Image (tube, rainbow, N blue to C red; front, side, top):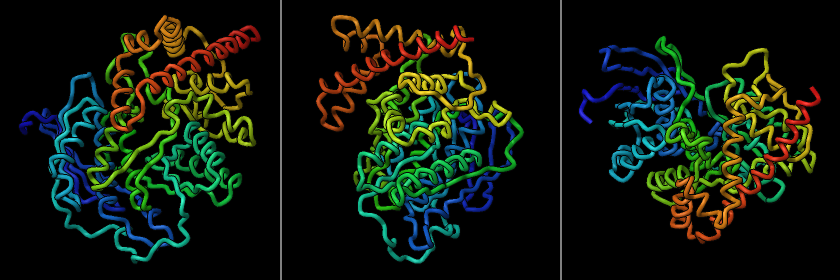
Length: 452
């Protein structure tokens, strides 16, 4: 893109643990603003015994830059925006390589719909603390480890719980991140309780980041790149730990995230952990690290109820109400963090209802109104999928209405050598289970309304 075609230019100083200056230039208004960002990645040097690789440090910087841009720029329309980003990196030869650079911009366009142009420069600034620790090996690092993102949500909790139950030899490093201190506290609280249930099996590493003195403009809460940012931070941490994979625990309904209505298409659908997103990012990270790296979601063919079932059947039930699933946390007050009526809350309630358990979560709206737009949209989708599954050839009917399912099967089959026919069968099974579980939820809603 030519300089005059950019909407915004972000110029980052070398990102440090303390406040780092960023210059934001709004081209249309010929306006220049200053703000600061910082990252607290000290937890990656546990006991100060290991330096963090420069590639990991660069990925952390890249993730903070992407998140700051997506957080500050609120889109008024669906018209793509043009971003120009000046960012110093340690491995200039890696990030300016055409195969790495081109895939990075393609992935960002896939996630956000915007045009991203990077001007990387050689970082000459002093190293951060994590880069200058003594180069001694990790002490007592377990042999079988799994590095996973840790959000404090029900999926990450139930996924970890299931993995701990099913793989008793594995140890888990949980990577928590973000800029919300309340979320950080919840992440730690739940991780501490998991540690009591499975002693010495999981370890929490938190990598928070912050920004200060941001321009006085309405912030963007619908951050399309947030999933990518968290994955990059998780991958940087995994690489530091000597792992060539990062795990994400997310149910298949939320991961694939089919449109609720025919009018809801494109960027209305979050792609945070979409199966194709994970394939694209895995390829990008493999190029950056110059070796195979995989971002895995072992639960992408499970419903949320199936993920939570292991907690319900064992002694993990009490942990469920401590997790959070809400899309609207920033809008709530009174200390209640979950609205109870957004699509994420409804999927949570649906999963617990399908398991026949009492949901002890403290919702702002305990009563579910079947006329509210979110639940009407979800019911419309469920009825539509149910009808498609009843057709003589369920896959033909399902993939005709939801074209992305064919692309998921084709790409995963090509990349992983899994049989396409088996993948189709498992996706049909995923949605068959989901519509059956939803029927139980509808029956529960009717009973609740009659009781009130």
